[in-house]
Length: 192
Image (cartoon, rainbow, N blue to C red; front, side, top):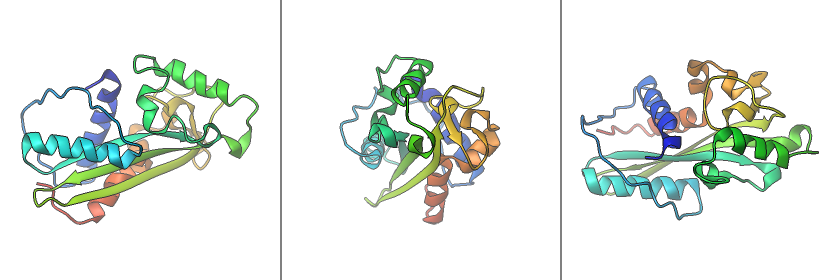
């Protein structure tokens, strides 16, 4: 697991617990080499993760892929969000690059969204997929201490603040991951 994925994994675990989705997490650690993401959509990337892990544990698995899509940048960074401008590039630099690339772009033309796709691989071979998004705009500077990644530049007009300014509880209740997990819960499956 890459260092950039530690925070999202903790959030994902918290979101699952918050939504009371029936998930058993075995008390084992699996050392997984970084995924080779070669597909073109968030769902395809989530699916390859879920299917690959299912082959290892032979239990129902859910996996996600997520990122930020900036309309004025033709949807970039998109599925390359974690690797945008280099996997080891700090998010403070990635965020400034996005802000700089939007120089001269104003108002709603700075629209963006966080996207999360979840794939569930079940023992009977079924694959369930859900998707969640949260809409916003790219701000003109980083703000906030909460969150991670692109949260400090993602402004939420509906809430009058940046994603990184929300409390963790509020963010989890409205986030793209939270929305995708809520949709998975609505599939009314028991992932045990």
